[in-house]
Length: 476
Image (cartoon, rainbow, N blue to C red; front, top):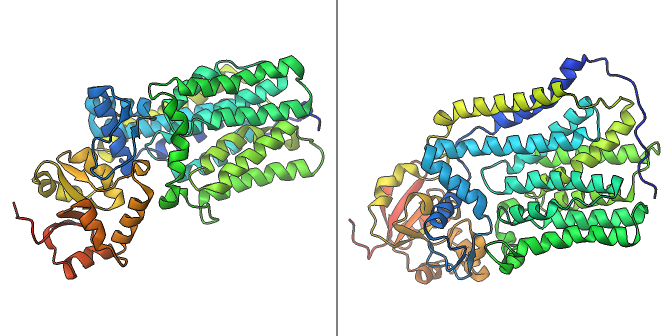
């Protein structure tokens, strides 16, 4: 299949150029300000704690330091953003940490703008940016995954450039090293590279030794990932996480009730519609990248943003070809407006941080005094969501489970699920964990079972959580 023809000159938009040049910046600023919120993801808390511990020990792999029930090695494969979170918390407290999410959103917005503007006019690029950012909202939270979303669009843009000019982007290798130090889905980069290489070969633009030379980029990227401080064991981390995805809500299948998924489908559907009309023949590279993006978006709700990031520049090129609009050159005014409005969004987010980010939006904060009074190393049977909050807020206790699900054995996680739902045999979980205290939501089935069937007493009650004490535990 032939590569895409060059986009015809097209006609100029009736929208004034100054207004068109401001559109990407407006989209970026709205996205950045929408990310200004308090820390509400329970996993954010253990990420901060991981950064704190790394600064103390500089140990990247080893036994889990927090839960007594973990049985798998703990690898800090996301240590770089965790360090940033830790330093920010020390310098500016939780409001400073909350501002990192708008900062990450700004990074993605700028990367997306750069990628789609290389393929499309200002108007088309702004529309694609808006749909892509909507696809991100399902996973827009303060976690290292924001690095993957940004670098996925950067990597796809780079390989589309290679498909056009045949030049290897060797800088993708050190970029993958940084990616592998930041998030467990670093393998998306080499995977996109492998897909693009197949497309480039089928398109026939690069062959023989020149094509084999390009293979060095994804291969070198995998080697770079093996050379992070975590060591070659990092390469096995995705397999360890895969075993436990069945227990995590965000790893569920996408649904049409997800606005993020609908936005992705609109973008993918519009691309396919353009191609089906026959006026614009896609290259094999574009076809394979669309298939890859769709695969990411269909398999899990959490990977919808990854699919959108890969799809964005491909969709921009297709929509541009069918629009009939001229693709304006990127002028200084557009760069200034896009970066300037993005910075304005960051300033607004910084102004909102002290009020929105001062208190966590997750965790039974009203039970802080009672939990802090528990003896050191007290094992607490907690709900899954509160584990990261306990690690961060109360180092005196040992949560029975938390969001680092890969450090727990699969059969143990199943035992926890039976416990929280008060399913037959749930009492065995208490013996397995040796818990004499429990921190649980008031509406969880096991909360009632503990008090009604097992004789546990209410030590303290919060707005939506309760601290329970076993009958054989002495009150403090």
